[in-house]
Image 1 (cartoon, rainbow, N blue to C red):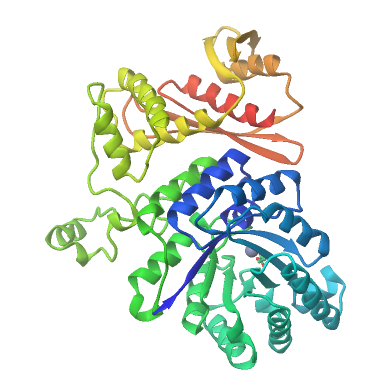
Image 2 (image 1 turned 135 degrees about the vertical axis):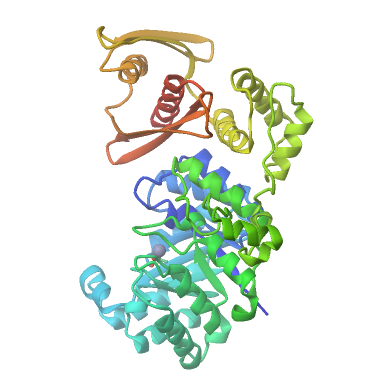
Length: 500
Ligand code: KIV
Ligand code: ZN
């Protein structure tokens, strides 16, 4: 069986997608979850693009010990120097440099001849190699490139010292049959190919990102690039959880295995959705809420007799616990801690203390607390521990259909308290206006506001996600409470703290 390496690019290609940008603290949280998942490589960002990206790559490089950390770099010297600067503290750093090889990209984007592109590949891979031994080269838009030219590009990169050569389907255009043929062609026509690892990176524009990646594995690729939940530019990238579970479940077809701890999949998926304020579609493969649900009578009957009648994987294999447990105000810290462990969350002593305070407050308001509540509460508690800035101290809102709605909001910042009153077009508008008066933040607009309940019932927890736009930047804020006005305020304050 071949060992298939998992190269995760959630923090680079995933984060590049509109509305998916993450704050530094959030990137670190995701990086640690990826480390727990045991990815082989995590691409932490594109260091030259902004100071934020540089800081993220550097911090992750200095933090993560059990995975290689990569930074993307165009095939230009200043990008490679920046990648090296950001990565030099890593235990296992990798520079990932790329240039396009398709006729359309070379003519219209790069305005370079084929010969110039080959020369640039040689120069920049050699340059990267002078800093770091592990250098990955990507031939952008490889699947729309002339295959003989692509073979020359791959040969040149390996000759210059590339340890990994990546064949991206940048625009999600290829099909499994073509991908299989392309990798087979390269294997047979590049004479130094055995000196490097062959990787693929498939986008999902036609919904074939995972299928194309798996076809490449069948043809001999030993690294797959992917993102948690399939996030990424446009329709996204191949989904990590789908690739890993396909390799696991169909070993006889792919003859490969990964080092991923699959029991961390559910947790990592939840974390990434939470951080971005997104929710999984109910029918999303592997991690959707219906992925292991059996409603039809005939299916339930079959599963009760033998799970394997309708289940090709077990929920436990991705970290979903078998049965839902219910807690209440009499539940003890140990029971909660144990359940969190079963759900895949290991908390430090301080984190557990902070979590338990939150749990008790919630248990006073809500009769029963289940796994979904625990996970939601945990996501928000983690956020509060890491988030700096203003906190909600208290608020009052007067609203009705025959009065002008007004809100008084008091925020604290350390020892200091700030209070403002404002009117608005409804309770949330009034409360947000009061917060704006206190914060004197840069000009911004509320781009999106969404509310949903975590579980059923009148006392359910409500989660609010807001998107705040400031210039080109869109920031996500999240808040959780059994009171929807409070959840709305918490979400706005969370977002505004990041903005400030
Ligand atoms: O899709 C793509 O081609 C990329 C490369 C930079 C690897 O993301
Ligand atoms: Zn990509």
